[in-house]
Length: 107
Image 1 (cartoon, rainbow, N blue to C red):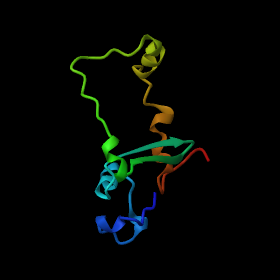
Image 2: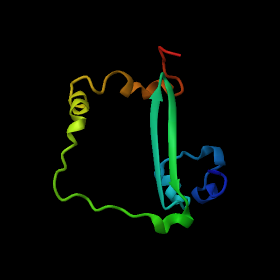
Image 3: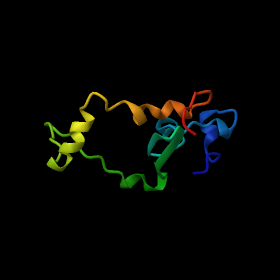
């Protein structure tokens, strides 16, 4: 994505000040956007996905389910891990290591 293309729409002092969050990308004219961040060994990574304006007509949203949907039985082992008391420990809360000034124990 060319961040300089429409960054003036956000009235930013320069294109390098653009934070790729979904709300900002929608303000720039993308009909749908997703920004997902994750951390790997103390390094922050960001995946940005957008739908180009000329493809907006292709977006189809599914209705919200009216009742609870149970996970597939193949996910039972994963569900047990996610419901465990230590699920949010370790790597999942590692994102702060990639921020400026953070103390990182790993390279």
